Length: 117
Image (cartoon, rainbow, N blue to C red):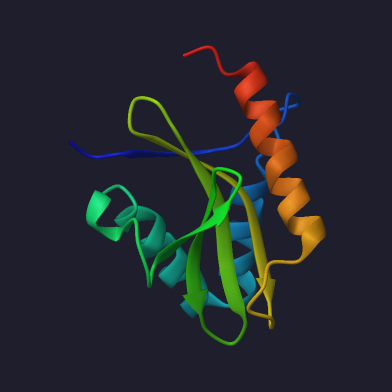
């Protein structure tokens, strides 16, 4: 059975991960294609480990792509084989910056409070 990949949306209907992916398409089409392919691969459990995916703690995981910059989509798992992507970042460092981690955790908490499935 496959997983579904969903994108976090704010109460106002904004979708930060989709915006991140759309911007990536404009600025770096090759990395965009790799990230979209990676998100598609996450539907299959065999890709829930390195090198594509890695646990980063506090229920968060990262989809990893190394290109001109390290491109990551942070996500978490929900019951019912659901994956919720909450934040996208690009940086040169191997470590995820603390503000980006906090943003992902805040969005995860918001999703969990509002999700009624």
